[in-house]
Image 1 (cartoon, rainbow, N blue to C red):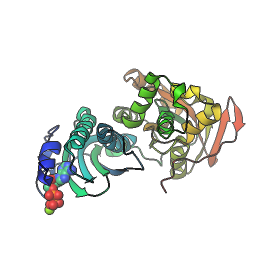
Image 2 (image 1 turned 135 degrees about the horizontal axis):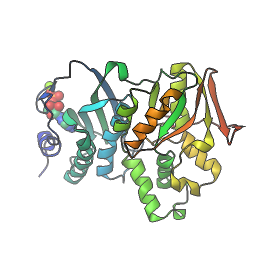
Image 3 (image 1 turned 90 degrees about the vertical axis):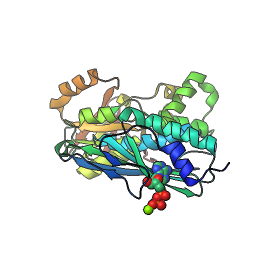
Image 4 (image 1 turned 180 degrees about the vertical axis):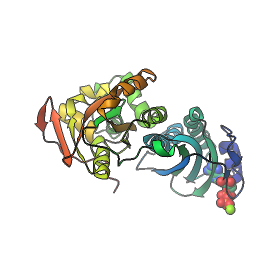
Length: 321
Ligand code: ADP
Ligand code: MG
């Protein structure tokens, strides 16, 4: 039996969390939502395309999970609290097995954040997934890219480079036989099921001067902070926390993945030195590690040091076009 548009919506998408601030969810021309009166809305959208952001053989569960995770990551970067999601899905055909997996991945990523899917769109065409996330932020605590100040310390959450290494393995650009099955599994988890740093973003937002999520590579994304804040920085290469599997790569390739690879979805943020004790307390309350990787400076541009010595590096970053 072929699935109609409405069968698809009711079977695969009319489920998950129910929030009190949703007056009317899926089913009408618009959703009706009641934002909290004291907060600002934070809204962001992202698209994942077949052949670009995932591949013919990527599992539908992974595609579903990641399509929510990338949007949550943008919200995390500003310290937002997730609330609602819209989903625009372009499908080549109505495949129940694919839809079941996709829906499972999508809702499993949304569930812990008490998000509700409140609407979307369905069209026929080459597989593409667009999510739009809507969340809330306290006006005076929302982190932006533009608040970094000279002498601020630069931190990142978690480890970097794993996403790019996973992608290189899938594209046969590195020899996968040097990794154990457990390492490969961990890398694929890192690439397809990134943990959105929502809790971390909310906890640092009262003290962070600037923040961004690392989706296109540390150098490219840190550069957004530097440009928006009209400052420069020195990065200490040897301090950057690296995915353990990357230690098997030659140093040049390792640092290329860490600095220029995308898909890590960690946060990069800056704080003043006075807030180091507060940051340490925050770290004790969550499993994620924060690592100081450099310092903001008044002199514009990015300088890189390795073991205290100046080092020349090339910046490529993920290029969308
Ligand atoms: P319209 O034609 O008025 O735009 P649709 O017939 O496309 O409305 O959609 C009917 C309802 O189902 C709407 O409430 C819409 O938001 C919702 N919807 C459509 N596609 C999706 C989807 N992929 N996920 C969640 N809700 C969806
Ligand atoms: Mg309509």
